[in-house]
Length: 218
Length: 379
Image (cartoon, rainbow over all chains, first blue to last red; front, side, top):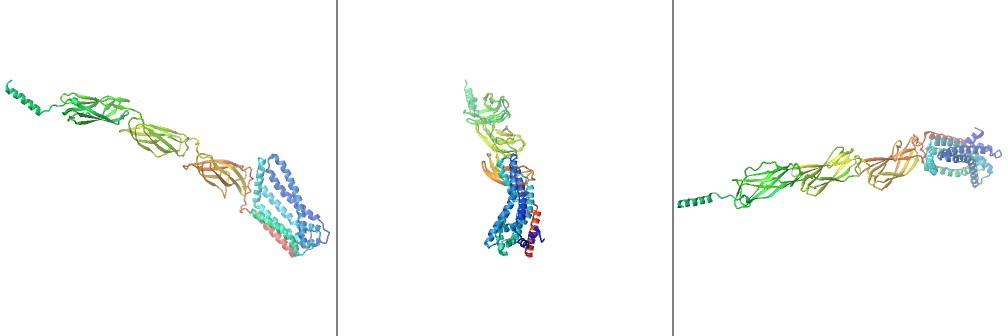
């Protein structure tokens, strides 16, 4: 528990304190972002595959391209999210006169994404359950595709598992936020209060947005 | 001549002049009128013939008997065996019961008066008309087609083509396989060339022949005429015809929701219109059944029903129930395809929140809380 990624999850303070002794490295954070991207790609492939089933027979090939886009988009999305969040933290920490390189911020932000791996895996499993329980009807005409997709989306959003995915995502995001607070404290040389504000403001807004979205489903 | 003989002859003449007045001549007796009730008989009818005579002379006339005889129309009553005298200027009436035993036409039974004392007799032929034309009956209103248990208005017109009045005219529906209101229709007296109508509410329960029997009296004689109306079931061209259009199938949690429009394309009102999903669909709340109410011709209304299926069904029937003005129930179905809507995800048994998911949430929440607590405790 004293070393490795487990330490990031349970003792992020000492982990980041130890990491500050070394040069910033983005290898492990990039690996974490890749795994998150893969879980996102799996979820995207499951949903895209369900959409394809609704396509008329002669448009199935077109749908396969959609699955490929979903997979590639999921992988890229993992890296994009990592970098975007890191930049946001770096900018916000500037308000609190933070000191430290962007690379270090990205490194520690990447470690903070580690709980999202578990969240992504659980989300992929639940997504598979949702779509496997969904007998998809095939649109007989191309003009019916939009109706089918809309109905399919409504059905997915109405599924209780979708709400659970949202709640689980918020929980893991809170866990990540906790890690990020420690990370920003060391990466940007902030007080605990300022580090909490650096992370809490953007993450808080995002969680609020997710709750509002979830409330709309309830 | 000796005076005594002359006196006897004179006295005798005086006695004869005082003792016995001489009878008037039969030529002074005339038949002043005759009447028959009913005025025109039908074959086999019985009527009352009344003959009135009057003594137009200055002296009474002695009559021994009065009788009637003839063929075609025969007397049923006995002759008058002893009539007596009819004073000067007086009238006397003789009534005979007669029956038309012959065919149609005008018959002349003879009224005979026999005078006393060899005075001969008076013979008077009485004209009696016999015509066998019955009352006519016709259906002047009926539906284009009959339907089982659907009430139809039937109007019967009865006309009197006879030259005399018909009395007690009524129409009685006869037969089986239907109910009718009223059970008979009374028209009453019909003058010559007059007519009367009566309307029946007929509700057939099976295809049948309905006999409308016209019953009337000609004098004291009862006659009937039958009018047969075949009742065969067919398509009512005016009946209500609810049509479902603009159907939209939506999938939602636990089932489907179908919305659409229902329009009455018929010519009669559809009452108590209900729209329900039929088998194999299972209606679910909140719209197990949609009560549209009354749809007048060309009226349109929206409807909404909710149901669930076992997931293998590709189309389900929408059942339309409605009633006509008489309360008869009709149903029609319209198949609705579910192909453009995905099958719904079944609701979880615990009311929409899966138990496994709830457990996962709780475990994750505990894990996250523990990790956060641990991280701050170590810090």
